[in-house]
Image (cartoon, rainbow, N blue to C red; front, side, top):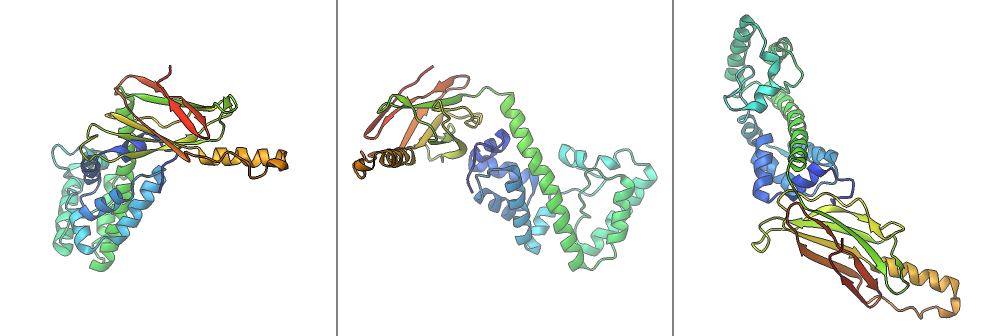
Amino acid sequence: MTSSSSTPPGLAQFNALEEHAAAAALHEACASARWGRLLLAGRPYATVEDLLTASDAAMAELTAEDLAEAMAGHPPIGRPKPGDPTSAREQRGMAGASDALKAEMLELNLAYQEKFGHVFLICATGRTGEQMRDAVRERIGNAPETEREIVRTELGKINRIRLTRVVEEAETSMSTSTTASVSTHILDTSVGRPAQGVAVRLSARSAHYGQGGDWRALGGSATDADGRCKDLPALPAGTTHVRLDFEVEPYFQKKQADAQQDAPANRDSGPGVFFPEVAITFAVVPGEHYHVPLLLNPFGYSVYRGS
């Protein structure tokens, strides 16, 4: 799976997190270690729907033990733990419930736990206290195997909501922090014209550069008729090094094919391409903009920091 220029900034930020930070964010969404590992292995994600689909696929693979681990991260309905704003927000339908309804929910929770050995779990977002009470009343009569699959489905719904919030919060964090930005354009010096249609990929590294940190692909674009990339993805907060990969071989191959079509006598006399790809790595600091033009010909190139 690859990122593209359409990757939302918050998702690009999640893609670029160091593994330990991404694992911590996923654990906040779901306490199943296996679920988290499966989602980490799928990075980078091009769209939020890709991330949510991967979550659904991971949920389908969880064993009974994995599900128990996931459920252990959820408090009983009506009793969110102090300092757990996520559960409190999701269970707000119980916040204004009457004392009688809360007492009834507590009694039903205890009866459910005694039968199934785990908390009653439901995607509580948007549900009223009465709706949650009615759901536990209905489900308490299920067989354990049936209830386990219902729990799997409900966990999947919760994880989708929480993952969406992870991406949204990452985007908010980016908008309130100062980051570097990057742009580029390409000039074909063999003809003195902009190079159109060259694919450009953007990757970033954090402060762990030089200490085993991985490059994170953020997405890409292609040069327009002016040779410019105007929609490169935003850089995540904390980026210290950037890499631009230019796929120049297809551009020169097309030029050669067009020239041979216009002048058949010159067939097979094209210059070839000595550098099929150009990779440029440079350091950045927060708050700065970096315009890095590429001057290109079939047998050489140069770059510089522009303005």
